Structures are given as structure tokens and as C-alpha cells.
Length: 498
Image (tube, rainbow, N blue to C red; front, side, top):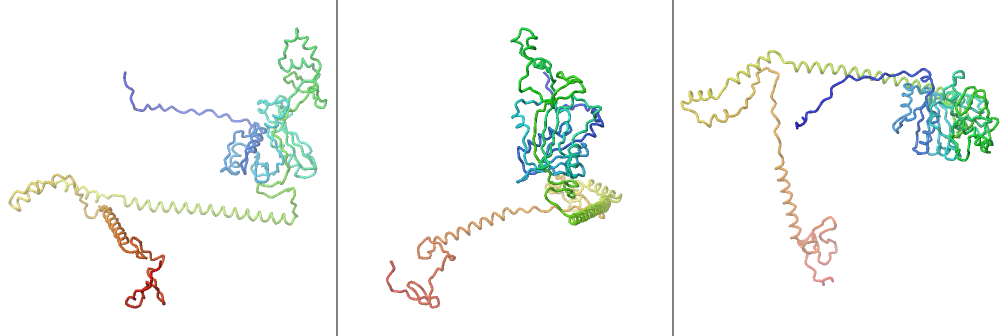
């Protein structure tokens, strides 16, 4: 069997075909899109709340938006134009409060709400008696229902218009009732100034039908094992249970045919199933610009006209200073780039001049190579015979003949020079000698300390001049001491101390 070659098999380069990019229709482009992000301290429940809010805003939202700590709000603002984002909702958690900011892209206004209470979607669904959640409901945008936003005050009108513009509008002439499967309810309490946000799924059930017929119409397969005929099932199931009694206020007349037995021009009952999340919040302030503009409304801080005018002038001055600094930075960048190009042009011309080889230098190098190549050992031997009169020794020209090294001949006036290499400084021997002398010196000092006597005459004790004096000196003189000035005092004849 023939072995496979180890040479890599390169794939043939094929032209890459680009997939055709289908342009979105104008209705989808012009529909309001949203970004939902979170800032501040990290909390698992706040992350879950932001995901539930994204799910409520579907399908015109970035459901799988990835955010990191290094990302700033400006990064999402720069991307908003490319993705046709019209609103951005920011959940910001601090050590004291949780706030929700609704920003109109790209230049405001910014509405800041303080979140008093919230409930996650999973908790709302788990407490329901019947869990009614379908993935098909999130394929179409929800309806917006506003309650009690018609009071006095410009902030109420601004809130109402902001909430309405966050969701696509409804065209009554072209809308399909089958696409209305969810609704978002925003209710304002003028006394407590709280806003309750609720999210429901909408189902339609036919009215005035027998219980057995309703089960058949709604495509729920009944258990017919106890009946001999389908007629028995219809006749014995004509009574409704107490849990299925409908409210007359929820009865509507449909304009289009729907599934589950809901026909046009017939009455049907609307039922709402809460799917979460729940949010109770309060408006704190409204800013004119993107999170840093003039405060148009504040909940508990009021300022007179003079203070407002002073703040406005201060902001205008800061804006002018910012523009001036920006222009100055641009001028400095242009000047620096110009200086860099001039320096590059000067150094480039000098290098090209120095690297050019003239015709005169080429001719000199050629002559030097020819002159070196014509020399040989035979000419040197012949010259030795003529001058000395005897044949030279074999060892005399052996090293010169065996070596292949040729010294290059650099002619005078050429632009080349051979710089000698720096000699290698090997200081290992010097270092080893210093180490050896140091070891000998330390050994000698150690031997001297062992041989000498210590402070109190004991052998082996080391001298330590830093802990005390080696000799006792004093004016009165003590036993066993010597006077410093005389030629050695006499030894005292007293008794020894015990």
C-alpha cells in the first residue's frame, strides 16, 4: 500500500459568494426599536427583570444584547443609528434605590423613574391558577393601554407620548385581530403619583355556547369514554361552572373571524392572563438632553425663574468652552501630523543620499577585488628566493596558504569603513578571585575571634564594642580596673567577689 505523502494538501481557492442581503421593509425600519440595559451594582434579580422587560418589548428589541462593565451609555448611543433604535431603557441600581430611565434617542428627553416595587415574570406566572403562556404571542408587538394620563401638567402629556411612541402605532384599516395577543397596561394614580405597569396576554372565547360544544369548538379533546354518543356529551354538558362565568362588560362583537369558534358579528369574551413583569414606579425628573440636559420637571425640587436662568447661562458657557477645546484639539492634531510628515521627508532624503553608491565607488571596489584575487602564495615564494637566494621553509607560508580569509581592501575615498568589533570582556576570573579573597578574609576574622579572650576573660567569647565598653573606667577607680592615664595601675588586693 502506498504511503500518503506528508505534504499539506492545499484547498483550491474558490470565489466566495456573498449571500444576498434583503432590505427590510419601510414599516419595520420606521417602527420604534429599543435597547434595554442595566447599570450600577450587579444583582441577579435586576438582571432577570431587565430580561423580562426585553421580552415584554419584543419583537422590536435586542433580546440577546450583550453588555459588559466596560461598556458606557455612549457606546449604545453610537450603535442606535445603525440599528434604528428610537428608545433606550436603563435600569440603574445603587446602594439605596433602583431607577428606570427612558431615553428618547439620540438627543432626549430623558425620563427618570424611581422603582418602588417590582415582581418578576416567573413569580407572577407561578402564582396564577392557570399558566397561559405561548411563544407565538411574542411574535407581534403588544397594545398600549393608558389610564388617567389626561390630568393637568406638561409632564403627564410627555409621559403619555413617550409610552405611546415606545410601541408601533396601529393602523385600524389594515390591522388583523389575530395579531393582537398581548397588551401593556399603564395606570397613573394622581393621589400617590405612582404608575402601575402590567403585562397581559389576551384570549378570545365565544359566548352563549354549551360547555360541551365550547370544548369541541376550542379544539380541546374531551373524554368521551363515559358516553355512548356525542349527543349525550352535548346534552349533559350544557351548564357552566362557576369559574367560567363571563363578565358582561368583557363581551365584544368581533369584526373579523378568529380561531376557536370566534366568528365575525358574534359576541365573544375577552380574557386577560397576566404574564409579568409587574413594576410600580414614580416619575422623579425630566431632562431636556441625553441624561445631562436642562431639568424640565422635578418631583420635589422647585426653582424660581432667576435660578433657572442662571443655570441656563452656565450650561451655555460650558457648551462654548467645550466647543473651543474641541477645535483646539483638532488644530493640535493637524499641526502634529504636519510636523511628523516634514520630519519624515527630511530624514528620508538624508537616508537616501547616504545609501546611494556612486559609479566611482563601484569602480574602486571592483579594482580592489581584482587586486586581491591576483595575489597568491607562489608569488611570495618567488620573491623570497630572489631576495634571500634560498628556498623558504614549508612552515613559513603554510598558514597563509591554508587560510581562506581575505582581508577586504577598502580604497581611499570610499564611503565604507570597517569598524572593529568590541572585545569581549570576560570578568569571570576577576569575580572568582574577589570571592576567594573575601572568603579568606572572613575565615581569618573568625579564627581571630575564637583565639582571643572575651569581655570577661572567657575563651570563645566574641568582642562586641556596640553593646558596651570593653574596660571599666571611672574617677574613683574600682576593683580590677585600670586607670586610663597612668602607665598601668596596680592590681587591687581585695577579696574576690563571689
